[in-house]
Amino acid sequence: MAADLTRIVTAYNDTVMSRTFLLPDLGEGLTEAEVVKILVREGDLVHEDAPLLEVETDKATVEIPSPMGGRVEKVHVQAGQTVQVGEVLVSFADVAASSGTQAAVTPDTTRALAPEPETLVASSGPASPASSHPTRSPQRGADPVPATPATRRLARELGVEIRAVNGSGRGGRVTDDDVRAAAGRRETAPADEARAPASTAPGKPLARVGIEPPPLPRFEQWGPVERQPLSHLRRTIAERMTLSATLVPHVTHFDRADVTDLDALIRRNLDAGKARGVTLTLTSFVLKAVAQALGEHPHFNASLDPAAGELIVKRYVHLGVAVAAERGLIVPVIRDVDRKPLLELQRELGALATRVREGKATLEDLRGGTFTVTNLGALGGTGALPIINYPEVAILGVARGREEPVVREGAIVPRLLLPLSLTFDHRVADGADGARFASAVIRRLEHPDELLLGL
Image (cartoon, rainbow, N blue to C red):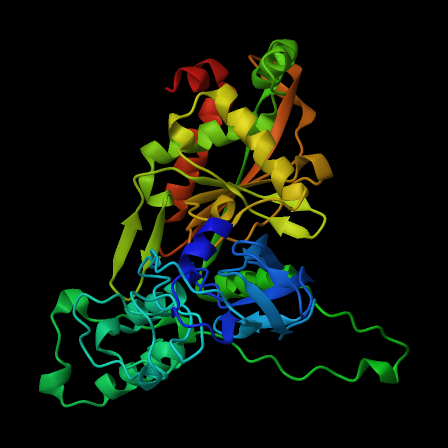
């Protein structure tokens, strides 16, 4: 991540002058970050790539390096402060001349920093005073559009061609308000101008669905209270859960898997697994069963694009695994679960969970999931109603397995039963679809030989 940020902010003017360094666009719709720690002081001489500060962004702590060598003139932020993309972090003086190397950028990070005089920018050349606040003209051609992924998604939902939108943000960045304004102009345009092919006509923008909460009562009138500010992570979780619960019609299917044979298999192979550096757990088998079931039911490995009227089916299986860390619930992602042997999957799961709990997970660890599994078994409980990790369309909850009396071939025998709760988007699948998918997972858990053979 540090290397990516360095590439984003390396290009700047060759003259020696005071420069300001802004919080770059970190992609994936991230519009703000919380400053965790300041690593330099005003007056310090720093070299290029030296760490400047740590920020917590979308559940990961990221160290931001200096894009240049020079003297720290002013630190504009403090620990605990939430800063927006494009906000000034540090000012430099006595900046050494650049080597002339230009930044390598992607469409989502191009011009992430405002192209103003005496300001670091991520562009293909030096900035000039005349370009301090450029106005983007419609139809930019092949130039990447400076906009966050969240703004791009909003444009798709509202049926707005983002290349035709003039950006009012720093450096011509297209903001959410710009997109909404363009959508409003299109809706009031003459019918002939607004007419579009049926395949591109926008659907109802779900981003506008929501309820404004009423004001809270004054709790102090009944007794003493303590007001505790929410952490950046807690706010992120709250916003995403509210988004999912508001936009998605949730439905949950409950079932149980008889994992007696699977539990015996795991116990038999604990020592063999440890000899190969892994500790076998039920979760890795659940992940493997889910990945194989998604191959049979790919519409659960998808995202819904309501504006385009399309279901985006992913042909890769990257599973999110909910991990209870000290700072809150974090969902790292294991990639290509369907193609990995079980021991490799278990090894990666253990390493990923350790990084999350130690606060060392990277942004890349947390991105790109297609389906989520949350295992609450270690904490107890008989079941749960998990909320979908938007924009995914389903999540599987796993509770604690319990030994219960079961009738088998006319006799009552003890069996280990594992409660499962599959929550899915009712716009994408019906109850029968959910039951079939859950059955596909259960069949593999109840026949671990088939699970290991990939059947």
